[in-house]
Length: 259
Image 1 (cartoon, rainbow, N blue to C red):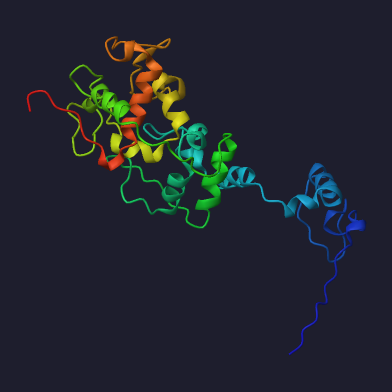
Image 2: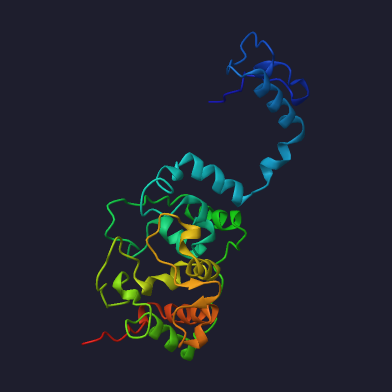
C-alpha cells in the first residue's frame, strides 16, 4: 500500500510562518514559545544548522550529565566526589567501565549509595568528561614502574617510618588498621583509576580539591614531615608513591610492626 505524505511545512526561507510565526495559525503546531525563544530558533535555523552535523563530546557530556542530574549526588552527598573534579580525576578507560557497569569491584563497597550505570552513553560520556577538563579522551599510557621508586613508596605507606596509610586504606590484601572518620579506597585500585596529574595534585593538598575529604595533608610548601626519606622532598616522595600504586593488584603490602 503506497502512502503519500500529505503534510507540508514552511520552507527555511519562510521561518516567520508556521510554528515559529508570531501568531501561529491554521494547522501549525502551537508550542507556546516565548518571543525570545522564537527569535533564537529562527536565528539558529538560518545560521547554526551546520553545528548539528558536528560532534562535540564535551557538549554531549554537559547535556547528558544535566539530563541525568549527576550533581544531585556528586557534590551534595558526603563521601561522593564533587562533579567538578570527575573529568580531571578519572582515567577515561576506567570511567567508561564504571559508566558501563562492568567494573568487577566497586571502589567504595562500604557506601550505601550506588552509582547507576549508563551503558548506552558510557563511552562518549567518559571521553567528554575528560575533554571538559582539558584531558585527552584516551587513557594515557603509564611509564614502566621504577622498582627503586616503588620500594621507597612502599616504605612511605608503612607505619614504620612512613605515613601509616593503611590506618584508613586497605593496601591489597592488607586491611585498614584503624579507620577514624572515613575509610579510604584500597590503594591497589588507585593506579588504574586516577589520572597521574590528579594524583599529584591530590597528594599535595587534598582539601584544596575536596573540602569534605577526611584525607589529611602530608606536604607543606614542597616539604614532607618525613625528612629522612628522599631529603624530605615532597615531589620525589609523591612520585615514589605513584610508582608504588602502579603495581595495582600485584602490589606488595608494607610490613606491619609486630607481625
